[in-house]
Amino acid sequence: MRSRFEWKRWRSRVVLGIMVLTLLILAAVSLYTYDAYQEATGKLALETNRQLTYVSAARLRNELTRFSEELDNLVRSRQLYGGLTADQEQELRNARHRLTIFDGGVVLLDNFGHVRLSEPARPEIQNADWSDRDFFHELLGSSREYYSDVTTDGPDGASVAVISVPVLGENGEFVGVLAGMFRLGESRISSLYASIVRLRIGQSGNTYVLDREGNILYDSSYTRIGQTLEMPSLDKTELQGDAVRTTDPDGNDIIASFAPIPGTGWTLVTEDEWATATQATQRYANSLVILLVLGTVLPALGVALLIRTQNTEMLERERGAHEQRVAWLIQERLLPQGSPMIPDWNLDVFYKPHPSSGGDFYDFFLLPDGALALMLGHANTKGLESAHVIDTVLVALRSAAKLNLPPGKALTHANALICPELLGETCVSAIYALLNPTTGQLAFATADSTPPWFSGRDVGDGMSVAGTSLGLDIRSEYSQRTVTIQPGECALIYSAGLFKARKPDGALFDLASLNAIVTEPGRDGEGIVEALTTQLKSYTGTKGLPPEDVTVIIVQRHKDVVPASSSHRAIRSGSRALKTADFGVD
Image: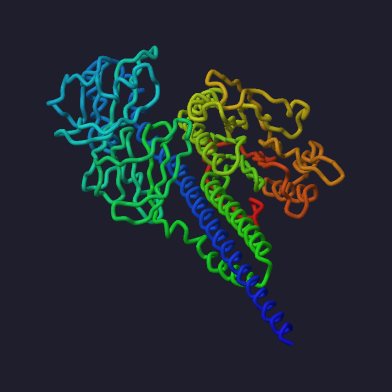
């Protein structure tokens, strides 16, 4: 009897010991899992802030380009680069109202770095030797604009940041520098500060713009302008910046993100509160704790592995959904919200991006003479990097359109601007076309892209590829062709993904299918878009998602064209906002 009692007592102690040991093991595994979750959450927050700062830096570069373009337009004037002081002074005076964006004034230097003129006039610096200024000597032998460090060359010795451009003569020789100055630390908002504020960079903390030496050019709180901000050194190859967890001067836990502003030498810094940056993911912490507590009834190792697996999958899904939302929002802002409306013409766009690609882009640009520039291309990158590349290419193509260049020279001009930014790591196929609504002439040039397809023409020539991709070789030049679209005819400018849709039996969407859609009697541009949508769904399923992006610009001339007036004015149609369904997102 006693031995049986001792056996039960011993067995109870063994069971209790096993339970205690199991709970201890489970507690250790639970703490490890929770720490791993917190670490993964922190990494996700750092990566998210780094990406947002990187994209914001690219957007800020576009804002800064407006200032350098104003100077570029001025230095192309013969009166300015001709060398006659009276003519130069008159030209600066005529441009005075446009130069008010430079609140520190504008200074013209000759090819030796001596101050020649200033607007507003500053007699105290006349003929001063500024050849040692970085915004002068860095432009020797360069044709690009330069963004300076902090200097005290402003009025009355004020601290300024300088954007300078070279002044080139008739034969491209260097004849001087035109420098626009922005005052730093002014109580009023300057044009430079207003451009930064307009972008609404940052979420819950401060935003800074630093020069090469770490001097603060802009501070969203306007309390530290002119001071020096310490930051980790960025490798020149680390073009997408970095993010670290640190503390601010008040001891608050923050995320500091750094990203170089492309082509400027300046750096964008954003500081966000750690609690705010991780708020979206911390809501899962309580659920995780509950799962760990409930898991005490399961084998410790099995519970730990199960929770770890679920946690990892949850973070991956959230990361993918977040990146997809960010890329979609950026792309929505880059693409036009509607197609132009031109008398005697139907214009429409079929756009179906693939969720994992998103490299296609298109744009319209209305010229003062009534012509319409059409642009379509594809970047061989994905996600946020693709959005940055597309933004860069669209800015270059719009610059060519503003100069009213013919298609061949437009692509050559855009390629020269894009190559230094892409550094040969990314290439972009593109087509640039100009439509004369009065004559029906469509002039186009291609860069590793298929030429337009014309109804009623020989379709065998329509699949040839010509021209080098943009961004590969700065020496590339592009030729152009001109085709007249007759009344009742239609031209399609399309991306290569159009002919990659495949049915389950292997049949590809081909030219015969396209010809049947376009040549249907009485079908306008909107009808072609609806027919393409229906056809692609029959090839790719109910979502209608082809293997790659598909973009088609429809340019259709009315069958009975009324004699054209002296000018055709294109106007924007009602905007059509992109929907998540367009990107394959439910």
